[in-house]
Length: 393
Image (cartoon, rainbow, N blue to C red; front, side, top):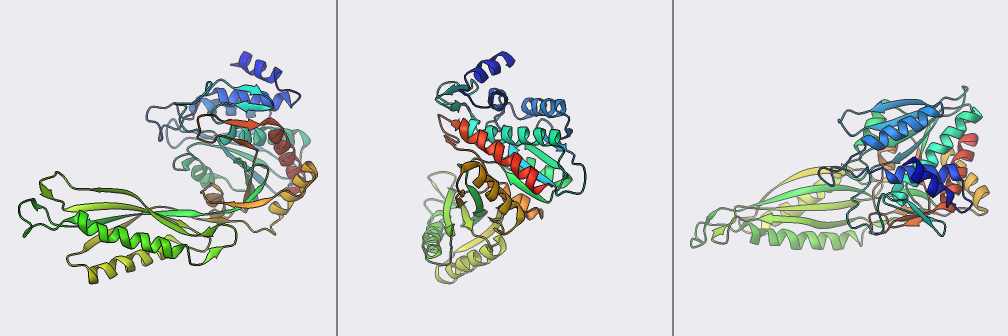
């Protein structure tokens, strides 16, 4: 691997060879999330690499592995004392390499772009964080700098959850790709499973059976109308409206029987200020209305996974520091935006750590071709290093 890394670094076209080599090393390590692809490699090998790389540069390294084979690494560049602490968060698990064009684990540089699975999402952002923290240790800033190299972001975000059980900081930056713009908000989500209850009977006995699937049709129409109303309700100035859709449906045993149950899974995308409990109350009201108007309409509901929406305080020092340092590096004020998808920013904020997302430019997250723009990663590393010096002083 080291020889391959050197070959990639030699084609870095004038970019920081240490940074290009580090990205290439990370991309070359198979770290497909086994919760997405059963039997996949997982994060052990890449955790080993990050642990060695960070320890060799004098950082204090901690390995968290309450789930065997799914470790996260937290490295700390201890400050001289008296400054604010900053956490840089990035994940090293990836989605599947199947169907990737050109060799998913064979990093290569073409026209200033580094190709490979995870190059954009988000091993380049992790490399920038690692290198910025290592250089901060050499410069001896006042506050501590933590680098959280986390597992499982692509599935359940257990890695960041585990890190937050053990570590905290005065602020955090998640280096997910953001095209060198500040992501200051995103939606959350909550899942519900609704079971419509019928009565099983032979298909020849309509006098005995209650068709749960047919009854579920009433619920599906009501949910569609509810989703339409959501789009006309309160809108977030950046994120727009909350949304809802039916994700899964399952019911019946065989063609000759009345189905006793039909299960529907619903996803509701939430806005800052909305909670799963409030959404459940609204959904229960919708189903109770159907119970009053549709004969033999019986149901139960269970709330599943919930992830909070995220909204940064624009006036917080970490946001203002990143924007100011990015302006110095880019020669312009960086854009600020929100995202419709969920990120680990919400978990970090829920743990009481002010944060924002700021990362590199590129394309192809989860796609058949993925690449990161090396100039943008170099600028990201510079922005992170300058932010550390300014914020942790």
